[in-house]
Image (cartoon, rainbow, N blue to C red; front, top):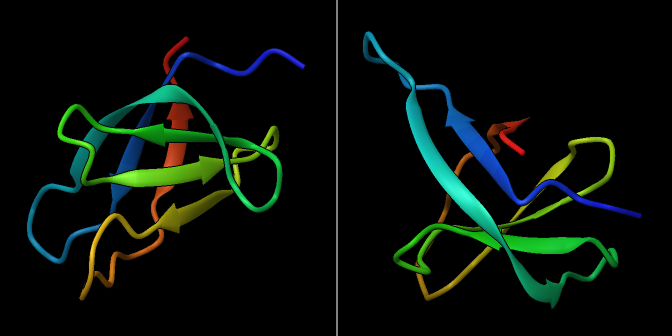
Amino acid sequence: MEYPERYELIFQASAVEDDVVIVRRTERAGAGGYPIYEDETGIVRAEISDRGEVRMVASGGHQAPGIPTARALG
């Protein structure tokens, strides 16, 4: 299966604008067997299924990220 190279992760914010983070596919796979995507800092990591389901992956202690929606960028 071919997975998109990049996604936008959209975190709904209580402010006026949502928070959007661009992530790129890595060579790693998550527990569900789908690719792990991460932002350029390596802090934001997510496993994204072929149906666009997102599972956030902690990159350090004390993280409690919300569950974003994902939009493929290609």
